[in-house]
Amino acid sequence: MKPEQSAPSRIGIFGGTFDPVHVGHLVAAVNAKQGAKLDKVLLVVANIPWQKEHTRVVSPAHLRYSLVQAAVAGVEGLEACDIEIRRGGQSFTIDTVLDTARDYPNSELFLIVGADAAMGISSWERSDKLAELVTLVVVNRPGTAMEVDLDQRWHTLLVEVPAIDISSTDIRARVKDGRPLDYILTRETIEFIRAAGLYREDVGDGSRGKK
Ligand code: ATP
Ligand code: MG
Image 1: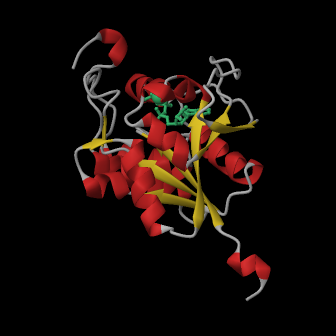
Image 2 (image 1 turned 120 degrees about the vertical axis):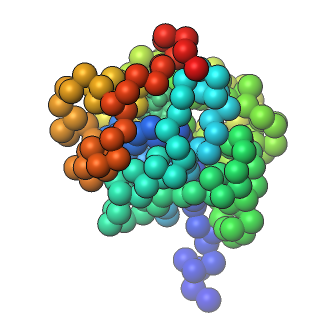
């Protein structure tokens, strides 16, 4: 066997609510892939994101997954992943990492997080185990300092990506207000949102404190 065939593949796990997926996510994913020399990046759609569960209504998981599928279709090395939806219940990254380790037994696992998400990672479910199993790939995100203070447990790689100051929260507000979505979402994502009638109603965002 040639040496390159026996080298473990490098799999990136990029989890999110993706409600909806936007270019900030996609630009982060492709740049993390190149920066961390990953073979592929799985965009893992949360089933029930425990951090958002009681702050706002989240769109149905299968619709968020379809949005991600539409956004990455035909993009080499990016893959929509529904493992958390198939597992059901609340989505904990540690379970996803354990399942991915089973699906890719000969791989190194990299967990991609924006700087804002990285800040809270030590409070995530079974974070000790998580830190043992993955290398954390932290990408910069406007609004959060890149000097994320992570303790010694974490093997960390910082990857600089083009700073794109948008969030899914902004996008949901833009849909509701009828503001343009062009160039901050893929064309396929915009078409899907329109066809499904997503985000037109005020379903309560965290800032308003409604369920
Ligand atoms: P919301 O406003 O609903 O929280 P979001 O835009 O923050 O949505 P999430 O699904 O919460 O998107 O984020 C998933 C992951 O993507 C997180 O690790 C987050 O840090 C990262 N991320 C989101 N937007 C960006 C961005 N513009 N640049 C870099 N990373 C981002
Ligand atoms: Mg977020």
